[in-house]
Amino acid sequence: MIGADDVEAAKAFYDATLGTLGVEPGFIDSYGRLFYRTKTGMFGITKPINGEPTTNGNGSTLGFAAESPEQCDAWHAAGTENGGLAIEDPPGVREGGGMKMYLAYLRDPAGNKICTLHMMNAD
Image 1: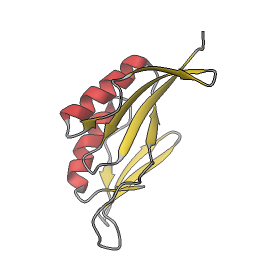
Image 2: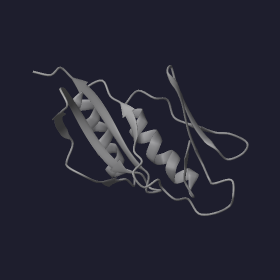
Image 3: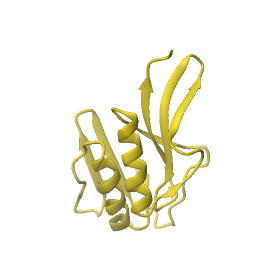
Image 4: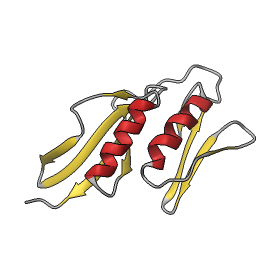
């Protein structure tokens, strides 16, 4: 669960980005919370219940698994086209610690840092 002051803007953004990963559009429950269900879990977005403005976690990143580098690129493009902000290096291969992965980073409309990650075979 992450926070967003504008749940409708979050829905437009996440329907577009998560849709590129094969996730069905989210639904808003009777409390105004937005949820996405997948075969492996659930992701939620809500206005803070204390009534204070949304803040993002300093040092926090929420990651979504991607099946290919192309899926990461499509996710990133959908995000920038729907209110997200491209951050860090452009989408691409990162290596370290014996791992090779393809990553793409964004800030969502509420400022939360998110990414997609595709694990690759180390050469």
